Every structure is written in structure tokens, then in C-alpha cells.
Length: 219
Image 1 (cartoon, rainbow, N blue to C red):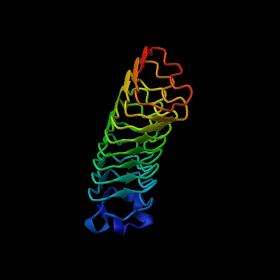
Image 2 (cartoon, rainbow, N blue to C red):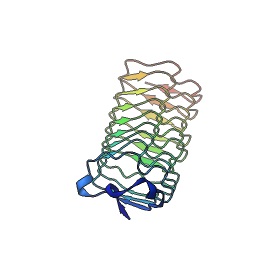
Image 3 (spheres, rainbow, N blue to C red):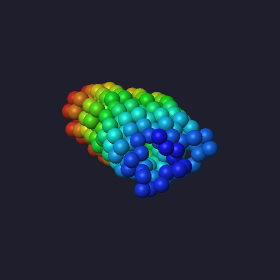
Image 4 (tube, rainbow, N blue to C red):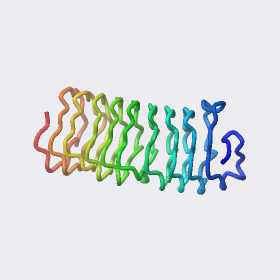
């Protein structure tokens, strides 16, 4: 175990546990822990910010206690191939490419998250359900190619961008708060999609339901 504020670059590769104390909870760390292959546990319940690339390449990371984080930068957990459970109860903003290609979790529930960055969960093969009750914006390709994603709960979503749910396993979609879709192909290739409700939509892009071969109802 080692305190974050005392870390020096030459010893990072041997770190197995990271702890962040009260004094440093608002500090924005850089990428000090990038490629720490032996890092397995992070205990930072008071930390508010995770900077870009902060834990990128930590392939052994499996236990994370960061329940008060409000913002995560891009690629912060890229190549974290052992990380299976999200525990970010206060998270408000998800950076781009966060878990692209490597998320092992089957469910996402982030009750305070309002913004999901581009490609943040793209190609998370195990993801089956998404619950983002406070989310108002989803950036492009955020959940693209999540081939097992069957359910989404987004009661306050206002806008989203191209390819957000392209090539997923969604069956029914209810997005009645949605008003604007920027770009194209949001549900393209959702071959199991049968019913869509978007009653307040005022602007959409092209190829919205291209290759949605089972689609029977849109209202």
C-alpha cells in the first residue's frame, strides 16, 4: 500500500494498492498510475476527479472504491481487462473511450450521470443493461457494438449523437424525453429492435433505423 501523494515514477510498476487520503481528495492527479500492471486495488472514496489515462493499462485492476468521483477523463480505464464492476455513485460525467473494447461488466447504473462521452462503452461485449436516469446527453458511438445490450433506461435523455446504439441487441426503446438526434445511424443494425417510442422528437438524422429488420412500430 502506498499513498498517492508520495508516489515517484521509478516505483510505480510495483504498486499493488493505491490509497488517496482526505487532504488530497480534490487534487487532479495526472497519469501517474498508467500501465501499473500489478495494481489490483484502489481505495479512494473521497476522490472527486479521475484524470485522462489515470489508470490506463492497469490490466490487473479488479477492485475500485471511488464512490464520490464526479468526473472521469478519457481513457482513464483503458485496457483494464480485469475490472468487472462499476462503483461510481456520484459520477456526473463520463469521458470518451473510457472502457472501449474492454468493459467486462454486464450492467451500468449511474444515477447522477448527465453526460456520456463518445465511444465510452463502445464494444463492451458483456454489457446487457444500462440505467442512466439523470442522463441528458449521449455522445456518438457511446454504446456502439455492445452486441448483448438488451435494455436501456434513459427517462431524461434530451439529445444524442450518431451511432450511439448502433449494432446492439435492443428490443424495445422508450425515449419520450428525447428531442434531438445529432448525426446518423443511431440505431442502425439493431436487428432485434421491434418497438420505439420517441414522442417528443423534433430533429433526427439519416439512416436512423437502417437494417432494423424486425422493427414494427415507431411512435
